[in-house]
Length: 92
Image 1 (spheres, rainbow, N blue to C red):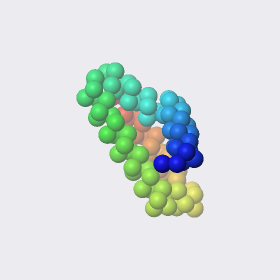
Image 2 (spheres, helix red, strand yellow; image 1 turned 180 degrees about the horizontal axis):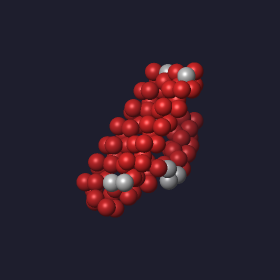
Image 3 (cartoon, rainbow, N blue to C red; image 1 turned 90 degrees about the horizontal axis):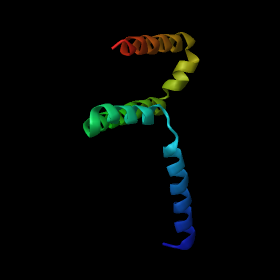
């Protein structure tokens, strides 16, 4: 491996580590689940976060964002459905 490529990989890794240190909702969910459920709970939460991210990425690839932008009524329905889901899951 040449020195230029090695340096580039170090920079990518350094910036990637910074990105992972940002406590987003997924990271906070993993920390909370691991704290409450131990390693088993943390592993289950990790699989859930990965599955959710996969769904969002495939929807983006499918162009759902463009569809929702073109159809404001559908976008509003998705927002209300998400709000209803959050309201019901917060009660449990």
